[in-house]
Image 1 (cartoon, rainbow, N blue to C red):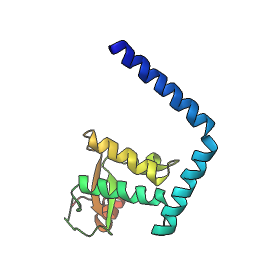
Image 2 (image 1 turned 90 degrees about the horizontal axis):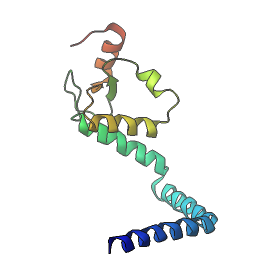
Image 3 (image 1 turned 45 degrees about the horizontal axis):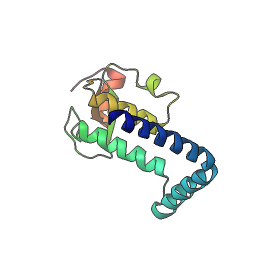
Length: 131
C-alpha cells in the first residue's frame, strides 16, 4: 500500500512540474497581475508590505520598546547589532531579505540584536555609552 502512495506522489509531482513548465507564461502573467492589483489597492508594493510585516514581527519579538530607556514609540525604534557589524551585514541585501534574516536568527535564539530608540542608538554607536 505504501509503495503505491509513494509512486502516486511521484507521478503527481512529475505531472505538476510538467504542467507548470507548459503554462509558465500564463502563470507569470497571473502573478504579475496579482502583484499589480495589490499595489493598486494598497498604494504600495507587496514587497513593501512584507518588509513592514517582518519589521513589525522583529519589533514584537524584541518587546516593542527601547532596551535602554523603554520608550514605546515604534517610529523611533531601530534594530541595533549588539556586537556591531550591522552595516557590513546589511550591504548587498534588500530590506526584505535583511529583515527576514534577522527574524530567522531571533527565532533560533540569537541575542545579537536589540531594539533601541534613535537617541540611545546614537549614544551607543558613537560614544559606546550605555545608559
